[in-house]
Amino acid sequence: MAIDISDILSCENKEVVERVQVGYRSFSFELGDFPITEAAPIALRIANCENKRLLISGQGELTVSVPCGRCLTEVLTEISFQIDRELRITEDGIKDGDLDEAAYLNGVYLDADRLIYEEILMNWPMNVLCKDDCKGICKVCGQNLNRGDCDCQKTEPDPRMAAIQDIFNQYKEV
Ligand SMILES: [Zn+2]
Ligand SMILES: [Zn+2]
Image (cartoon, rainbow, N blue to C red):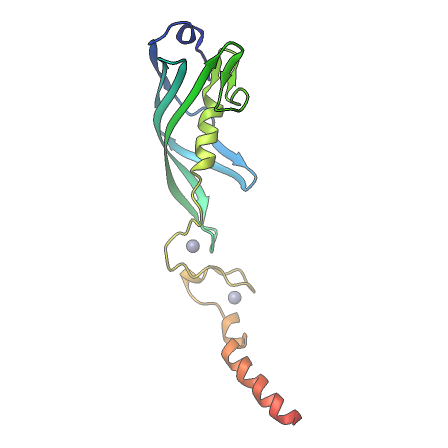
């Protein structure tokens, strides 16, 4: 969704509140493609304040489906973020700090989807687990160990036993 902010830019102390809906059904980035199952509309406040500052603010909340880091079960995960951007209005465009024009601005158009995308990316949940003590999946047969043990574990050598075995072997060599 592109919001024309030319009126706001030309008038000091003018502010508008735009109701913005997240414009995509899933969130894609280098880690994959994650369905957005719920997204509340965001009241995006855009204000031209004294000293040539453009303030963009709002509160966002959405739910994404992210696989558990251990067993890959989909986990509905809430992401909330606070948009709080301060830009400078200059003769040759709107500047984000000392940088060039912000990526979510295209002349007098504010690309709300892009702005929200950046916010979601910055607030992306790390280490999502279906539960704190998730047992993961068996590396041999792929069984989800939360649903019960598999047979592979019984035949796999216990690492502690393997260490004791090493010690015995060392003595044999001496
Ligand atoms: Zn899990
Ligand atoms: Zn197994």
